[in-house]
Length: 155
Image (tube, rainbow, N blue to C red; front, side, top):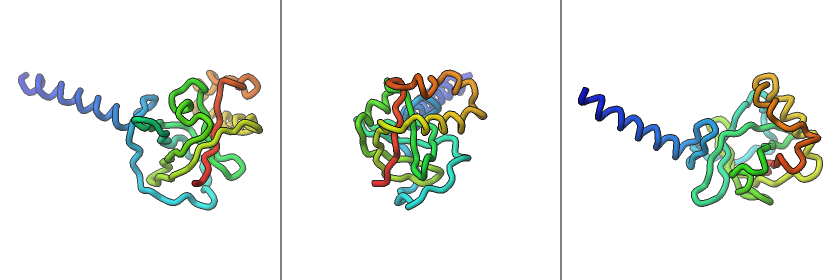
């Protein structure tokens, strides 16, 4: 019983520390991990990649787990205009993206024109595996002003 009184609080503290420093589901973290790798001249097929880690600037920086879509040879992410990571990127910012074990230094720039086909592909990619989540998304026609789409440019 005495061991349980000591072990349980230690486990709780450890879990809290992990939740703060590493992204877990919708909870952002601070550290992205991976091996720093120069971005390739052409991205490999990401159709089977469901999630990446994206580190956005700020004090402290924020690392989120997010979906990614390849559209016309470039990687894109999307999020709600009022989410913290979207607001930190704003009109563009340097970011780090972890894909597998590689971490790439990139620049996120907002896609202000021609973003609807990107969102259509984004929805088409994730709807088969996450229909309940996608059902909560606005349609591309309704997403104006609600959703931000960013292109992840090579630095």
